[in-house]
Length: 265
Length: 329
Ligand SMILES: Nc1ncnc2c1ncn2[C@@H]1O[C@H](COP(=O)(O)OP(=O)(O)OP(=O)(O)O)[C@@H](O)[C@H]1O
Ligand SMILES: [Mg+2]
Image 1 (tube, rainbow over the protein chains, first blue to last red):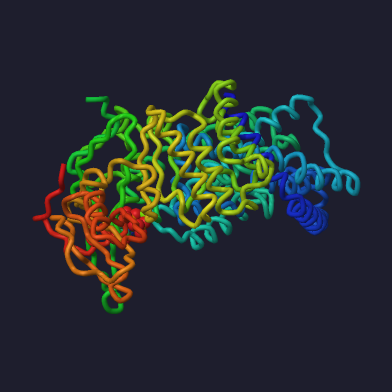
Image 2: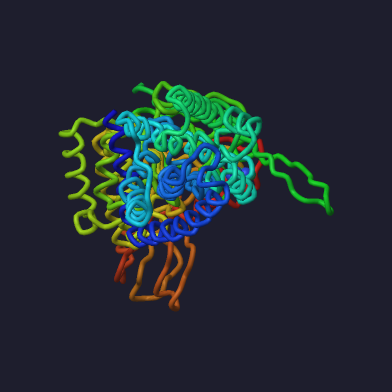
């Protein structure tokens, strides 16, 4: 446990050394928050203020919390592992007395912690100041949101790690990354709430892909969309995906290590 | 016979490389990088593992440390099967690959060391003691708080060696640890490793292209070429095998007359109008030769040259590879 904390701490501090990138990221997320917020409110207005079971203030929250979560779960742009595989630096990871999946996960949780304190806080605060945001009615929704976000980070990590692992076979994974970013944006509920889709499509996405578990779930839990039972199911869906993905990471990692080659002399 | 920490039997690794032939066709070819290495290393040994570029040194080290699965053959390191028991083996070994870093690029050096304490679960007091020693011997204090990415190569390398040692490994694998270092850093690293080796409880496996490293540090020398061991023995044994000689260079007041009467001293060169003569010694001692020359009078200056490691290794590398070559020992 001490080891996990130490690694998480390292992940946290690593990102805290990049202050300018943090500021720029938070600024960008906030600007896009305004754009998305105006668009979604306009859409809701044509539908009489209510859309797919969300009221106006819930939609505002969906947008701004989403802008903050984006950096926390980091749906996009993580190629650390793939880069290390390509250059052969992954060798150093393999020479540690730790399972690589565990040490990368601990580090990633530290990174998420840093993002939560910086890049989550800024858009959320700006959104709350400039718009009428929905605040949860039951106190329990706050810890539930926290737990759901934590699991969302694990789910997102699992997918990112798997995508990165393909570098053992492909070495250059730019194609895979592009495909994943395209898919993740639409299918996770980032561009529009997944509830906008027909019921069967929602079912396919929640059960058949890990993307909603990485993004839409914590937001729906915070804005208290649907019944308590429905929201518990979301959390359950997330936990299943997290377990499945971490298991898959371990399996693929093992295969990669046994069959493949660490690059470089 | 002391305890064996590393043993391999007929260790092999073949890489499959595919090359393009024509527009769409690809041809697959296997490259034998390591072609049957038998190696036994006892605790406390300092082993120099050398060979020309592409000989298979790094590939062997990867298999010994468990990051590469052998194509065939047996490997045991510290009683573990490296690949299958990699994470357990990792506690027992320290590894420095000269071209790679095991430090956290964005964090200060001191922070990397602190993290390693948690990763290897080293008791705080042991960790502090070992770190203090490395700081003193490798002069780390000046850049301990600098992020690793801002360190010079030599500074980073000293950090890498420290990082590899903080958990008191039984075996230390070093793949070109002095590559790109200046004279002073090289000496610091060598002195440190020599000190470590002289205590006798750490086994050291070192690959390098700087043969001075080997001369200073390793009594035993394993040379591989094309994936095969072509020499396994001491440096003097290697010299004996290639009949490399010590040389005596003398400066004379009067030109060389052409005889010494010392058997085993062969004239190799006569320069400066006969005032400077180089003898090769293949028997007899330098003392006998010098005494004989002094008897004839007119001896002004004497220099004794040890056989050159670069020469003998170059001769070894230049030999055509073949199965018929016998390794001594
Ligand atoms: N990933 C790989 N794929 C294909 N061939 C490889 C791979 N890694 C190494 N080889 C080949 O295996 C052989 C041995 O390489 P290795 O890196 O072990 O050499 P080395 O003795 O460490 O050389 P150097 O002194 O240049 O570091 C070389 O012919 C090299 O081309
Ligand atoms: Mg090498």
